[in-house]
Amino acid sequence: MHIPVISKDPDFPYIIEVHFEKTRQVAPEPAPKHHSKIIPILLVGIIIEAVILGAVAWRFLIKPVPKEEEPVPLGTPEETEEVPPAPTATQTPETKTSEVDETLPSPQKIAEEPLISMPANITAAFDELKDYIISTGLDMSFGYMDLTTGYTYKYQGDRVYYGASLVKTLDAMYAYEKLGTFNWYINALIINAATYSKNDAHVSLVEELGIENLRKYGEEIGMKHHLKPSSIYPNTYYFCDTTVDDQLAEWKHLWYLYNNLEMGWELGEHFRIGWWGVLSFPGHPQFMFKAGFYGPYYNETGIFLTDQPYIFTLLTTNGYRADKDYIMSDLSRRVYEINQSY
Image (cartoon, rainbow, N blue to C red; front, side, top):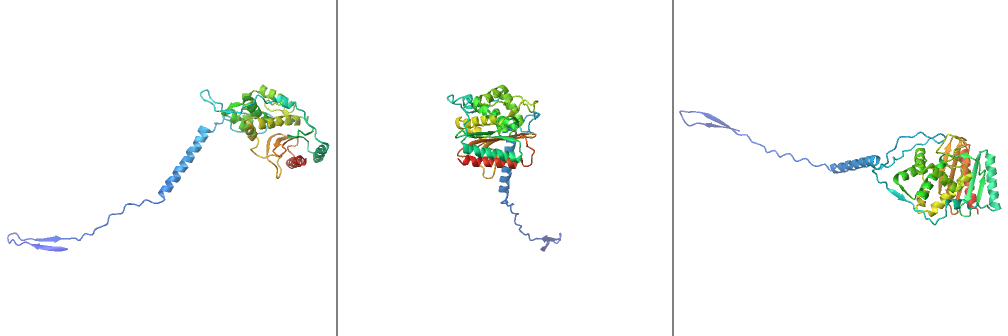
């Protein structure tokens, strides 16, 4: 709006225009609102970061760092696994205790207990099983031992096979029975060797425990071939031959430790996890087992945890046969049925 102002002084006439503008009030811009999604996003970010940091801590601080791979000895399956390094001089190893009751009978005394022959009708059932094996043409030996009655049946019990990874069972048994107390490093080697059947862990464990100690222990529980020079693959050192007789003696003693050592249940658990081998069949009961295979040799031994637990071992030179798994699984099923029949 313009308003003229006229001067009344005749000596200094002037006209002034006064301009008025109507101003409009502008409301201040509102402060930005916090989005409701920001807090959840921040929480998700924090959780993700925590998971990443936890994984890094597990990999580099908690999980043992693998050592360099060692060459797989001749005559063993192609198996590799990370093995934790030995504790350094500055480390105080965590120890595990498996107390051994000094009043328990010695392994040698247990091994010397006579095997008990089965009644004629049960022997006849196993003879039919032997005939079944012969009819399939599968080159194999097998053994059965009822751990309640002591009934025992063996087909070619003293025939020698290459045991491959079956040798690792005794590593764990010796550590739990003879050492009683062992550190985290030995425990990690036992898990990798016994449960996951890793060759480098087995080799390291033999070096830690002493090969002569393990050989002597094998003899004490009635084994003839454990860690002795192989007649099949003579260039091997940490692996050996085996027989049905050896396997029955070994797993009989494992069953004894499982039931009598303070940490016997943990020893048994090393053989209850992992993949199921050819001893399994539809509807099979829980069992502890160990497999060993190399070249044409395929072997499995296990303890079936039925109301009347028993050992069953299979050793064969027909590891490459396409129907091997079916025949051996069917054989295991038949043995289970015989065990349940008396």
